[in-house]
Image (cartoon, rainbow, N blue to C red):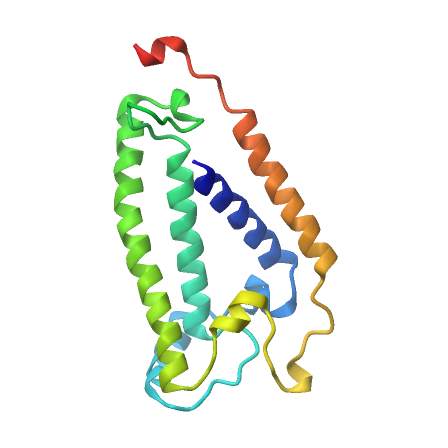
Length: 187
C-alpha cells in the first residue's frame, strides 16, 4: 500500500513538474507526434549521439507511457481488495464487481508495466553500448553536459521542493479522507 501511495505522490509531483518545472522537464517540450516518432525511430540503430538536452522522441513517449501505466497501477490499487488482508482505502465506495474488474486491470497492468520497464532499461543499456551515451546519470540527478545555449539557467530547487510537499500533502489527504470501512464488510 505504501508503495502505491508513494507512486501516486511521485505521479502528482511529475505532473506538477511537467507543467511548471524546468524547460526540458515540461510536457510542452516533449515531442509526441507519431509522425516524428516514426521518422526518428531508425536513428536508434545509428551510433550517432543525439546531443539533445531534453527528452528525445522515444524518451518523450516512454515518459508518458510509464506515467500512464504507473497511474493506472496506483489508481486501481485504491479500489481493490484481496479479501484477506488488504483493501484499498476506496474499496468501500465501489461494488464487488467493480472492485473485481479493477483488480483484473491492476494485475494485467502490472505485467504490462514490468514489460515496459524492462524495455526502458534495455533502451538505456542500448544507448550506453551502441551510442556511448549515458542516459542513466541525467535521469537520476537531472544534470547533463550540453552546449551552453541549451543549458537551463536554474534548476528551480525551491519550486521542486514545494511541488513535492504539495504532492505528498494531496496524497495524504486522499488517503486520510477515504471512507471508513464498515465492520460488516468483513463478514
